[in-house]
Amino acid sequence: RAAGSGQGAGGGGEDAGGGGAAGGGEAGQAPLDLVARYAIPLGKDPNAGLRRGHALALGALPSPQLRASLPAAVEALVQASRPEAVAELRDPETRRNAISALVELSQTAGLVATGSEGGLTTPLFLEIFEACLDAFGDYQTDNRGDVGSWVREAAMHAALPLLRLATPPEHGAPGSIGDSHAAQLSPPPEGEAEAEAEALQAALPSRCQRL
Image 1 (cartoon, rainbow, N blue to C red):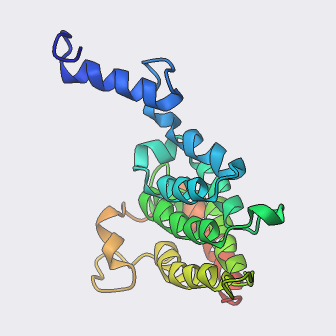
Image 2: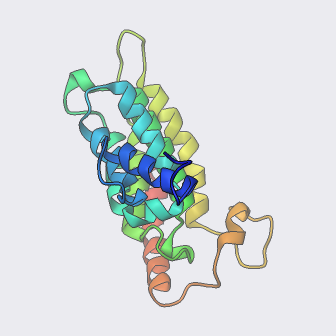
């Protein structure tokens, strides 16, 4: 069909994208619905293996898809990082993956406070940081032992990258903490970004004291 189509591979790609999004849904469905596709099952699918994969998939989405539904992606991963209310559904590997995905999401989207237009607002970033801090208190045990340690370890690995995002290097100061993100930074923030930066600077020290 793709070979006979006047649109060639492009036409076939649209068909495949529409079918994959909803199992035979509309061919013109935009790929920006990828956040909902992964976020909704992440919160309620009884299959732990699928939830683990959905968490990682959310974190791996490219910037355009994430920024189209950034609050929904963050909320889904934050909820997935917490112990499930139903004991039978509790899965430390899902929570571990959710913490790792929150870091990856943050690095992809960036922060409004550091000049990334359309990135994480300060309240959203603080919600992510709080989820990381809460993960340090995960002490679930089962017949495998202290499985909550997997989540705590993910939180330990998440703390420094998140702080790097929140404390970018001074412009023109290569080699400082977070220098890997220097190329993505805009000039010093102004307007909304400046207000976001001030709010972040005011809120971050009290969170850091909990580390």
